[in-house]
Length: 158
Length: 159
Image (cartoon, rainbow over all chains, first blue to last red; front, side, top):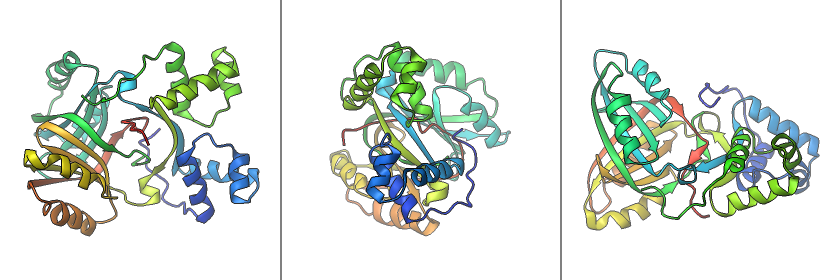
């Protein structure tokens, strides 16, 4: 899954990087087409992709738009924790399906979340029913996304 | 709201197809067709429609811990309302900034950046962004650990 620590031992060479660039443009480009573009064998392409995937350096996936999944409300939630390890609180929050990212952070807050819900009813339910029962949450500050101007998702922490 | 453009309604088959492609986008149409009990042509057509309507993007996602810029930083920005539009454009043009969101509530703008080093964070957040006209306050939260990140969901904007 996405949250496992990466095996930092892999080093990508120029050919790997060119394969990645082609896959970023067209994830379903066939090994044969990639091979032809880079003048190497399709077997070589397949082996390199597999090696990068096995090292957790690369995933070729469908990324789905929030709105296409019905998530019309996106909020950024900062959380101050007290009397409990922030990581324990964060891991509990990570189990909630509406929460799609949790970071342990420096600064005034201890945790930063991105939350996607279908509508304001679901948002209220999330804030009033799901979050409040988690021990250690001292204070919540939420901001509502009104316009996503840029969202680059091809490099992520895995 | 996070959707500016109306998305088509997805049916059961779309959802099943997306679920398979979210695991591995390089599975052949034939294999998906067999698995879902429809024709290859149906799968091909569905994928094309989902891509054309910007519901999905089939792409390579690389791990920042391996390919560089591993520090995720959330930059909350307070700024004058009249400058927001121009600030959005300037932030979006910065290569280190992966995500720019106009917000109501905590901040006026939230920028999420990927950085190589603390020096780079200071350079971008404390020097460049804070110096932009209209910016009155910048709050930086450096992610020291990612507990969850779902890379299969995003805001897809037309290329």
